[in-house]
Length: 319
Length: 256
Image (cartoon, rainbow over all chains, first blue to last red; front, top):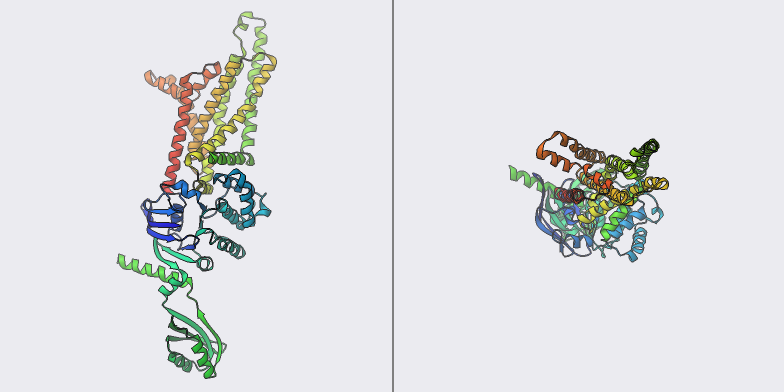
């Protein structure tokens, strides 16, 4: 649905993105992740046909964003960062405007506007001025506007920024419900957002794609081993050496004690689940097992490794 | 075309949900009304004097003594008010960031511009329409010459539209409404006073300055003369300004 090939853009002497390439399948939700200033917004603006790229090509829904810009724009819904809306219009008037300018036919317009208001939970505020709405409602109006032409592709730039936790959860649920019918690309610098909402992730750093793929694949790539955390009551040294004996375990670390129990971190090969063996061992030795869980490779850690790796590589190159 | 309509409707809504339209209408009519009153009262006085002097009365007519000065005064007042109708059009969209959405809707930049310009023109026509009260008052007392009246309004329409076109251009160049309004005003003022320097300049420059003066071209319309030279002048100001506005929008896209 979206193919981006070696996209490059400069603002004066500053290169915002360089050789950015990725592609997104139809119906997928992909998170576009990166620190502030990494080039997320620039990439999305190019995809939304707000600005042309200096080099490379991008195709959305089969059309080129530069030479067939109007065709692309008919098929996208775009939510820019900070949700720019006309504060002096009512929600209903604004959505009617968005529907008309996006080419929704006169006969369908009322129905479409009612549908998106329903979907984004805006019916109660439809007669209020947008300028008087809370941030959460404004964000929903922005989403409703993006959805009103039933687009193939949704481009959402930081859709949850500045919302309170409840609103964030609502917006995420809304976006998640869009998967399947729409292809969604959303940018964020909030890591959990991607793991909650997205299927795939593209990590961008300093204007370059640093990593991309499904979350699981990235976790495997950057963390080849699994980590298990457990709390066991028993003599720390004995526990440690016993755990080390379990086949598949690569490393055991004693991280301290809490409530009289030792906290251990076990690093094991990914292809072999050692948790059952650990539980059995602890039971045989008659120690107390207080806690045992596999520490998920959080996206945060993947991200830090990717970005840190980049930084390191960059340092080498300039040295 | 639906794009033009959508933008047009939105702009009209914004004109009337914000106080701008009401403020401009109120004060414009107040000031033009005051000018009309003083011109009318003066005509009243002179016609009473003329009643005792038939030779003088022969040269007195409504078109020359009321409508023409009223039109040229209105032209000057428009110079002050038109920038307020256009200052918001692009500057506010740029400041609030809504331009980013507007320019990613499936409409050409030209359609956006056409919708906005049309909204400003329609608002201006409504404003002009309200001033029809003054000729109507004159018509109540005496016979109005329709030809010069209509050509005078055509002149004001062209004049006001070129003010609006310049205003739209300036608005597309800044993010600040006050800057947009003030710069438009300054440019229009410049095009007015350039006519004054025509008197000082000699030779060919005199003709050039005179031709450039934006209010100079209004006068013959008031007399009932529609000169292609004047019509062409206003139309080229409009066309050039709108063309440059489109270029400014395009440049905005490339620069981000």
